Length: 196
Image (cartoon, rainbow, N blue to C red):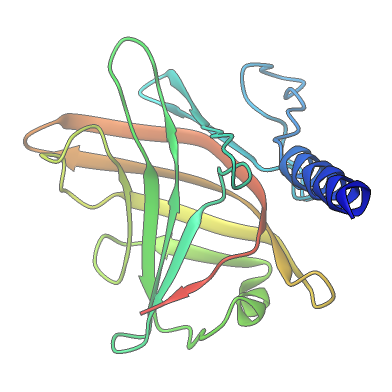
């Protein structure tokens, strides 16, 4: 009985270790500027950009419940809108936090339906489609630029979406000054979708 119990615990620990390691970011340096991750569409769980010429990269948080750097994707049914937030930071000279996008009018109600945005360029006009690079809660002016979903595929067997693309935008914020986000790219295997 004890041997079966110990064997079960070992299997559980191996499974936890495997699931934790399978979501680790795979960083492939960009051949032009190796500080950035290369654009890929393999679900490598990385994102990168320059914010005012400072390197911003997605952050990875290992934990007992599995690693986490997956973007937060929310759908607001009462407004037919979607928000996507990439968690990351710039260490020097100032801290920048998450990069987020919000847009409306696509009728997406599930993670699988996000594939309908494959090869879609969303013009970030600051009104119906916005972006924000959070330096502080005072920076509230919407970003204007472009979000491009270059490759999106849904794997029905595993229930995950490969979400890959590029972005760039500017925020002219009276409290924070000009925030310029350039050379943005992201590539994630996403398992969670949060309807609201």
